[in-house]
Length: 470
Image (cartoon, rainbow, N blue to C red; front, side, top):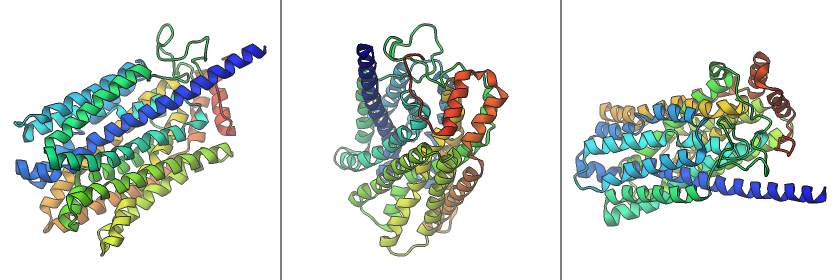
């Protein structure tokens, strides 16, 4: 008996260690993902000068990244419930690399930049929801907010690492070399992931036979309390207040993020007058702030849930404060005078909203059976990402149509601020994971007694761990 208990304890320790390793790899996956988005904005000045682009033309290139972004996120999101994490994420990273490398060719112009950004967006669309889904397969329900926060923080890390490196490479080797560097990073990540990455014991096992990237049944059971095959109709999940509120709020947050990726460096250069070296440091500040806020929000929600606070408060109301703060700061930013006041407002405006993202991801995951989770996260992210398709282009049109560039930036920032505030209000009113999870369970009790136990534990604040009996 003692030997068996020791064996189970050692196995659990090994699983926890691998969970941390996979989580770090997923964070670096999002680092590359974010750097791929940020590189266009960081090289905007040289690109515009080299190719002679107007604001609308540059906005078109930035928006083209998101042309297939949503469709890809939905399509691959559904595949995430059927294909194992190891090959799926590896293919995505290789697509990123393949899309970046052609930009090294001197003949690459406006049309080629649009084409490569479309391909890159198609590869990156599913990246964030699938990284979250894969992280969730390693952690029980009441511990998902913090892992999601680590994945989201990877996006902040991507900007922090990319900004000075991209500026350095651009100034020494040219703007095309910066894109090639990120293509090489995608190849390196893929090789490491194929060696040590994969899904965890909380994945829904939908295929015949054991999954090759999950612990074997003899080691750690591969089905958790919420891992039954789904019987809840997908349409019921995506019409809950939690899913709708989380999706709309994320739409507003992603509008602001894509605005920041594409236009913030140019705004700092053209309207505020910072040099390239100063901008490379400044654009990393919102990313650092985002990392702190994302991790803090995840930790606060985790602590509140463990203390028995409802998910509506921990994930809905607490989360809504962050885009509200971002919206107010963005409204004030273009009305601030000295740079000493402008910079803190811009930092919070382009970082605070994303602090809500791990909470909305966890809220959606908590109302879904495991076999519906990847699709629900993927569709939510895909619809929210439509804002990223619109924001850069709309901003370019606003700037070109305004009497001055300063007025154009002001109008574009005000639009983003209003969306953030509206998203905060909607999410505060609609995100109620406790209620929606129980409503879905009551309407579809055949989801299994195991799912029922999961929902009850979610209400009570108890953690669920896989056991040998499961």
